[in-house]
Length: 210
Image 1 (spheres, rainbow, N blue to C red):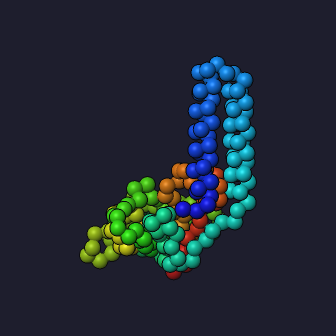
Image 2: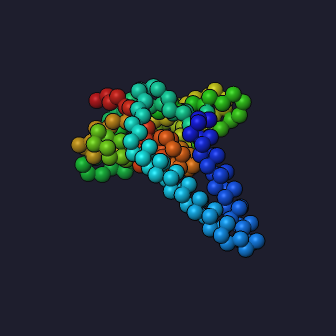
Image 3: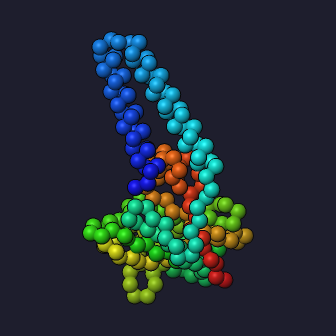
């Protein structure tokens, strides 16, 4: 847990305490005291919001090289490469005029020591060189005889698996990397978090292979 996470938790606790004090003052009909606490609460929330937005807007975007892991606590993802897929009825992406299918190789791993885990809310978007993003197709590709994995499959302690994610993108688009979404809340409200408001989320760079 980082210092910014601790500050967010302390801020939530502080706001909760102020709300309790406001309620107690109102019950005792101490209106002047209640108004003072409300003003303090408003100033604190406004100040926190300003810092959150300024840091999110000015903080440089993080990038991860091919094979380098981005971790959300003990759940981690690494991107390796992207290759264009040949047109095939086996592709899970519905064909559309003027588009291609790119397949990104992703590895999901766990740093947990004892527990099994899964990221039920995890999803990935492909970002092209112009900054446009595209969601993954509805299903992954199967490699070999093993059944295909998906991002939210369960992992045991120290386990990992690979996922072949297809994306449908325009002919003119060239993949730049992947954006992983997982546990966006409360991350959007944590100062300095990769998923905070106005901050561009981390990018897992994708070398492309023709």
